[in-house]
Image 1 (cartoon, rainbow, N blue to C red):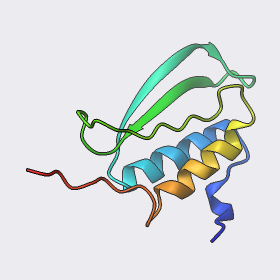
Image 2 (image 1 turned 180 degrees about the vertical axis):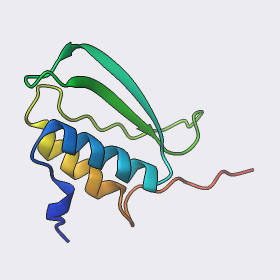
Image 3 (image 1 turned 180 degrees about the horizontal axis):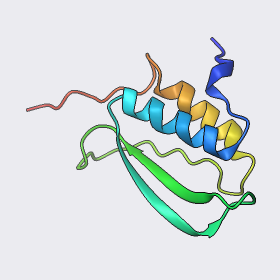
Length: 94
């Protein structure tokens, strides 16, 4: 089902939605600041969300906003993916 609320109108809104969705999914988040400011003088950063074991032998990596404005679409997809039944950690095997 399409969720229009996953998508944002600007960088700050997209970032906030991504971080909120990642945290609701139980992800650990990390921020890496970019020394360059955005077009409105805003702080830019790369945000990383990690779900599951840090020593996993296989991982899924998604990237959005590498070149700028196309990130709103990519971020919207990521926000929607965090919602159930999307990303869920695999139980640890003993």
